[in-house]
Image 1 (cartoon, rainbow, N blue to C red):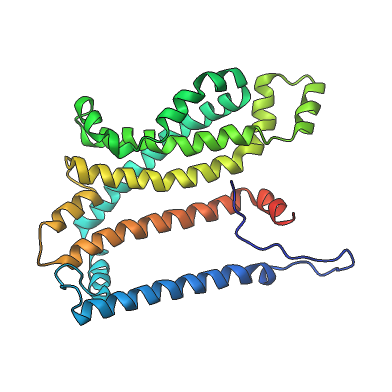
Image 2 (image 1 turned 60 degrees about the vertical axis):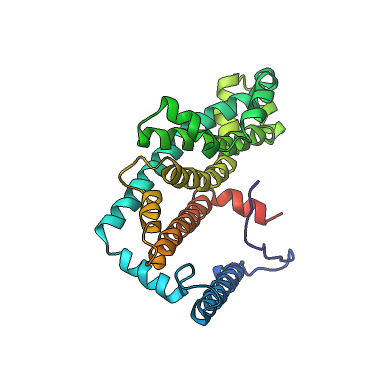
Length: 284
């Protein structure tokens, strides 16, 4: 469930030189360079198609126009307010989902009887997309902000909870038996043995859920359309202006860029918080 993302250096028992940052850093730098080249090629092809008139520039403006508009929006107060509104809904939704899903996942993973009793219900609800519930949710939650957070919590809690459930099953059985020998109870076992072991997997679930949360928030803004601010509302308003397609594309690009930055920051946070876990994974 967790990807280390770094190739572990190999060394024979007789080697005394430690694997320094330069040796471990090269694969990461290579990935960044390859990723940058891929993005550059995509933008160049987009620019060529837009300039050549293969597609009407009203519907597909050149990438340079979109990037220029995106830079301009970075200094626009109204646009930044839309970004802040979406981020606020994203952060609160993800936090609530984590506070619900982590205890639920630990409980289901630790008590097989409860897990068996609710497994069918979980597997029934989990595949239902959050955006598919928008018409139903609108009937009982007319307020836009509450609607966004409710659907975001519903959609994003599943990867966190499922990761927690299966991670509990991967806890070292030797540690469990040793804790039992010292008279550690079920709650103490969960708090002292299971939680530290499953924390890296829960963090991965939270990172996956963060992308889902952003998707649901923006989709709800687009479909429900009842709020005053948000990137979804910005995209709706931009789509009404057919003469400035670059504004619409810039709004969509802003959502993608925001999701990318969130993922990068959360990956870095995982590696810093659980450095011991990644070091063990890389050493295998």
